[in-house]
Image 1 (spheres, rainbow, N blue to C red):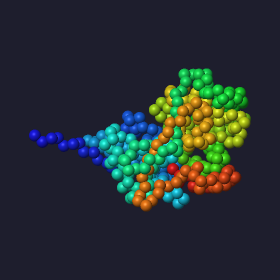
Image 2 (cartoon, one colour; image 1 turned 90 degrees about the horizontal axis):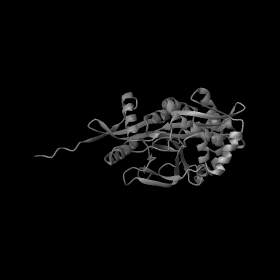
Image 3 (tube, rainbow, N blue to C red; image 1 turned 135 degrees about the vertical axis):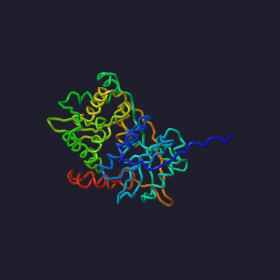
Image 4 (tube, rainbow, N blue to C red; image 1 turned 90 degrees about the vertical axis):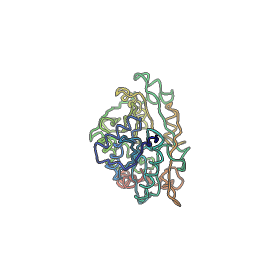
Length: 353
């Protein structure tokens, strides 16, 4: 008697314009507890907000999805072209029901990169085939559980950081949350000043609007204002019982009023009231200011490992702002008038991904 044929797995490019296809992939991401950056909603928001094409690869067996690799085709005259999983995210990469899907997805990604003229592929996760390069020792993630009530949340913050939050609580600050054009405008005003002060080009306004639109109730903006003026704001993602403050910042006025500290504490309380049980503080560069800030709030750094592939004789693109070659540019950017930085910044930033 002949042995039964092994079930064949196929790999193909996903059609992200087909709503039924998108729903199937979203369900697969939810079933395997993927990240917010695995969601087709993220890819489509990136495409709408930056013009970088949303792509993706699926493996299937007997009509069921067994693997998914979300990809953004990031191209820039300054930084070159790469397929990134996921563009503008801190997570992504291969998501699969079993490791049999890893090699087909990686091979198909290489073929897709070659067809699109991309010289490298960046996976913001560890899973890949053996010959893809590891990127280690550069970033750490920070995550902790949320406390049961507002007072317990305050007491869970280490003493020195808690003292700063208490100062913010004593100041005459207003807290608002929402998803309206007014919320988006307040967020952009705060965030663009913050990143200019750090020497970083700001992302297009359209990116934040697209994420709010695509994610619906799974994203919102919390803003801290003083005397009617927004001084700190954060756009957060909600996924799998966790809140991630993803794009946040404040201007110079926020420092003396401890508005940033107040903002993160208020977000913790707001997220718990929404039903969240975890606070994902995202990733930070080892040794950076944000890295130290998060440790001071009692979050333990968890090392992150990424994987890359580069075409023969090619190097993966370098968009690391801490690289020595960017130091002079960062110093110059900090000195730009804010209107100038906001005018030319989005053109540069949409190619970073």
